[in-house]
Image 1 (tube, rainbow, N blue to C red):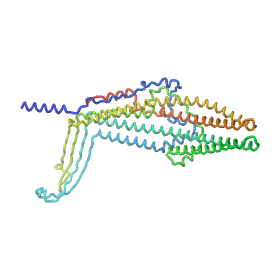
Image 2: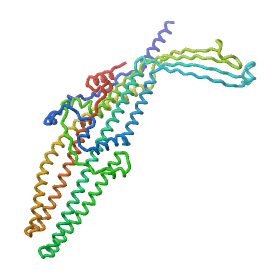
Image 3: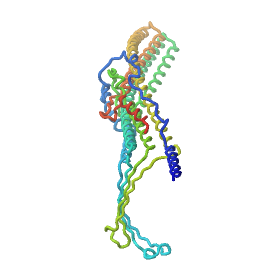
Image 4: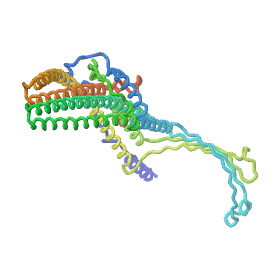
Length: 494
């Protein structure tokens, strides 16, 4: 007897030693905190304000038509519709995860007729056709002893909120793209104007040169040169017309409409670059004002919850089941006390030998969290770099635009003087041609710089989150404290 007890003890010890273990598995990645990212020297020379961009930031550009176009795009843009559908799908998955934490109750009823052969079942059951009818009510509940199902639900909720914030990021991207495309249309129209003015100048010079050739002042060489300049101006005008059409088509796509919609867009008014000053809380509050950063943080938290769920799979599980109903055959009354039946079935399970599946699953969850943290860190670093780059570009373009305006004023004055000298016979055609080309280049550069100023101001607003405000609840708590808590909980061992 004692020998048998020793054998049973040894066997039990071997079984328990073979139970699945989480030893050696953990996630090492740590989310960056705002104070770890040095940006004071890059951003220190910038004006500081107390406010982040407004939700309707585009109104600062000063064009009512643009306001309407952005509203239309936010209603009809296909990319935004896709993002919203993804958010709804993620919300449905969160609902399914929540349902998995709840008990289930099912009911059913059936009636069936059959004839059992007497060769298999003796009489009185065999050899006769009879009816069997029953009804039942079943209950089952997988008791979440260790919180694994709840953690899975919380992870699904986190991903649903991240998907909803992704939709906000798409909304920001769509509105910014419409503003930039609208500014590009305005620039294309300005290029069209410059091409028309250049054609008028080239035509005027050719007419004047032809008169001078007839008067014997110039040769046919100058006339052919002026004809070539006129033809080049005609080609540039055709190219400018094409750019206007392309800009209108690009806007139509963003509006979720066909190409004819672009034809109805009036010529944009000259846009004023939005005046943007950095918020005084940058970079600390950037964690909550960039939708892509907030969504990345929520995915880190969801991945931490997944780790907790995976760890609970190593632990014993308790489930409850119950079944009750009524059954009767033939013409017997179903609704009577003898027809009742019932069953209660509590169950306990413990993984012992599972071929490494649980460890592989946990290792995968750890790796998924490490990837989520790396993606979050990448997004945060990229956000600060994006702001610094756009800010530097805005400041540089302002200096360039001021210098280019001085160059344009000088080129216009030089063109006036050159044409006066050419008409009076003092100046040469070569001088007029040189000054004409300088004026065209100055006009084109000035228009391009202004368009870049508008474009970069929009990009800077987008880099600052474009008016996104985090929801005022714990779902968007992206503070370092919350991150540390999630990191610590993901490393615990059951």
